[in-house]
Amino acid sequence: KNGGYSTPDLNDRLYLHNQNFVAISGLEEFTQLKVVWLQSNQLTSALGLAHLAHLRTLYLHSNRIASLSSLAGLQALETLNLSVNIVTSLRGLSALPLLSNFYIAKNLLSTADDVVELALCPRLTVVDISDNKLLDPATLETLAMLPELSVLYTSNNPMREAMQHF
Image (cartoon, rainbow, N blue to C red; front, side, top):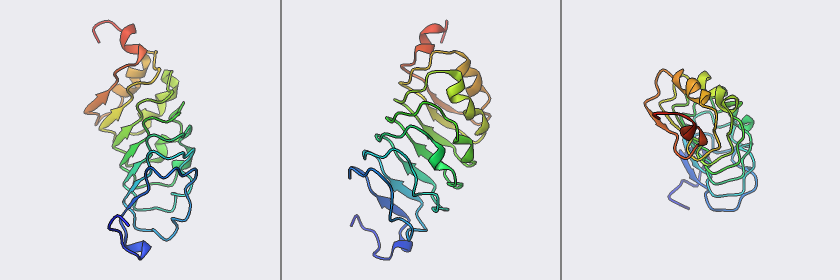
C-alpha cells in the first residue's frame, strides 16, 4: 500500500496517518525507516519507535501525546512535529541530539520552565511554539541560547502581549 515494499526492512518511509491508532506496534521489522507519518491518530505516546535507528523525520501532530519521554532512543531524528497535542513540558527533548526542526504549536506549554530544555538542543534551526499558553517573557531567554536558530514562530502566545516592542 502507498508504494511501499512488501519486505518491511526495504521501506524507508511509512504512511500511518488518519488510522485512529491508539498505540504503535508491529513495526519491529521496519528497521530502515527514515520518515514516518503518524499524524491524526489517537496516540498518547510514541512507544514502539525506539528501534528505528535511522528515523530522521517523525510526524506526530494531531494526536493526544502529553509527554516526550517515549521519544528517547530516536538518536537520528532531525525533524519532529508534535503540533496539536497536549504536551505540557519539553522534558526529554534533549535526548534527541540531532534535532534541528521542532514543531510544537497548539499544545499546553505555559511557563519558561516548560520550554527550558530547548536550550539543551543546540542544533535547532526551526522552532514553532505558536498557539501555546506561554506567558513568561523569560521563554525568549531560553530561545536566545540556541546558536543555530534561524526561524522562530511564537504567534498567539500571551507573552507577546506582555512585552513592549515585540
